[in-house]
Length: 530
Image (cartoon, rainbow, N blue to C red; front, side):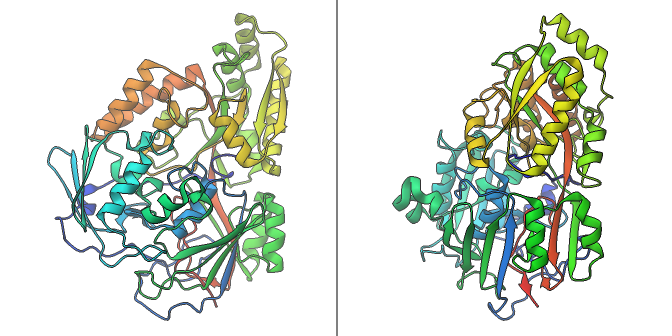
C-alpha cells in the first residue's frame, strides 16, 4: 500500500513533558543522542552520546528506499520517504530521542511565557549551512515564514504562529495567537528543519532538486528512480560526525527486491521488509532485524464529493465489510496491528476509539439499500508496490459479496500524491507515518480545507473539537475531544482506518551505530561499517 508513509508504523508515543525540555533562556543543553552500538535483532541498540572520535572513515553506506522521494524541500514535502533523506540533510530546532521524547538540536536554551504564547529560543553557536553561510536567527525566521506560505504543506502546522521576531543573531522569539500544545513536537519535523536562505532564494522552485541545509550530510546528486547520493559534511558541528564518508539511497519499490539486494551486499540496510522473510533474516548472524512499533496508521481516503462515495451509507458499508484482522494476518504476519483510528497504542489519545467490529454483510447490504445504491462501482488508486496491490485485492474481495465492485488503478508514488492533493480520485490508499502529538496525526487531515484533507471532508463540529484539543494542555480533556472526533469520523467515514504498521528494517551486522527512534527515521550520522 503506497502512502505518505510506506506500509509500516505504530508506536509508544510519549507525553510531552515541557518541564524536561524548557530551561531558562541561554542555558546550554546537550545535543540529542547520536547513537552507538549495533542494532540487535529486536532493534534495541545501545544509546551513547557523541564524544568525538575520528572524522569520516566509516565508508559508504547504501540504504534502500521503498519509493523515490518526490520533494526534497521541507517546505514542500508531504511524503514520509522525503523525511528519510531530509533528516540526514537538515538539522532541526528540536528532534526526537530514542525514547520518543523531544530533545533540543539547533536550540540550546528555551523559555516559554506563563500564558504559553511566547517561545524564546537560543540557537547553537558556530553552525553553518552546507554553502558556508551562517545559521542564525534571521535564517530561522526566513524558514518559518517560508513554511507559512499558502503553497506550503506546513501552513496548517504553523497556522497559530502570530509573529516571528529576531531578538539578536542567536535568539528568536515566536509568538502564538493562542496556546498550542503540539508546537514543540511540530518543530521536531519538517517545520523545524532549517534550510539555507541563500540557496533557497537562488534556486527558487528548483531548490527541492538541490537542497542545502546544515545536517551531517550534503546533497551531491540524484538520478530519478535510481539513487540519491549524499556526502559527508566535513564542517558538521557535532565532533566526529558523521562517521560515514558517503550515504547512497537506492530506490527499490519492491520490498523483496530490496531484500535480495541486502543479502547480496548491494545495500547495507532496507527501510522495509517482507513480513514472511523477517524470521529467516533475524536468524541469520550476518544480519539484524528491527521490528518496532511506530506512530502511524494506514487506510483509504474516500472522496466525499464524488459519486458513489458522496453517500454516507456507501462509505459506511465499505468500512464495515473490511476484515482488518484477516488483512493484517495475511499480509503482515506480526508487522502490523489492526486498527480503526489515527492514534496508535501509547498515544495520549489512544483508547476505545481504535476499536472495530467484525464485518457485517447484511448490515452493509441494508445500508446500500437505504442509500438506493445498487451495483456500486468505484476505483481505488494505490501504488505500484506488491504489498499495496495485495491489500487492494483483499479489500476488493471483501467488498464483492455486498455487490460493490472496486476497481484497482496502480499509480506511481509521486503521481499518486499529486492526484490525491488535487482530489482527483474516488478512493486512494494513503496513510501517515505518525507523530508524537495526536494533533499531528489528525488535525490537518480532517479540518475543513486542511492541506492533507484529501477527502474534501468538512464538519463544523469536528473543526471545533480539533481546535479545542490543540489549545488544551490538560491531556484528559484533549483525549475526550479526540474521542468525540473519532466517533464522528467513524459515522461519516471520510477515511477507512485499517491498521497500525510497525517500523521494520533489515541491516547487515557489520553496520554499527544505528539507534531506533519511534518516528521510523533512519538517522545515519553515527552509523558506520566495521
